[in-house]
Image (cartoon, rainbow, N blue to C red; front, side):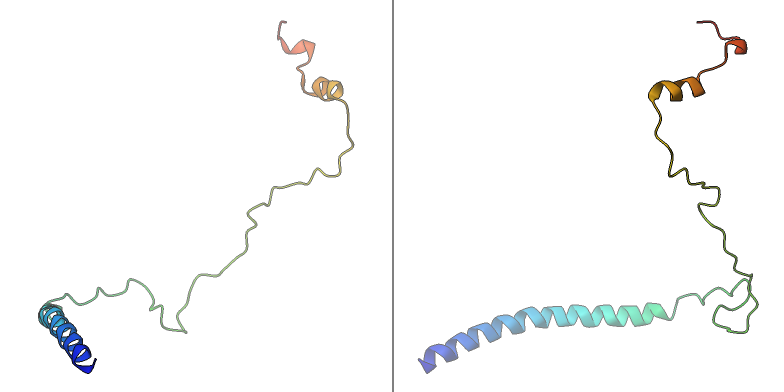
Length: 99
């Protein structure tokens, strides 16, 4: 039993070393390339305006505007029949509309 376990560990170990050996080399190459090319990066652009990290910087005032300001509630409304509602929205006979 111990010989079988030892053979299994050896087989798995060789596969793991083969996979991670190649990937480790690729990863190390990418790290070296990133560090090398990182030195070629442009410096960040200067800020246009006050520094946002400065707590003493002057900023515009904040105001409140309601997003539903012109809203007017029509409840509770007394129920009425549909004929009365239609009469209220029909054009008057003097408006020039012919039927």
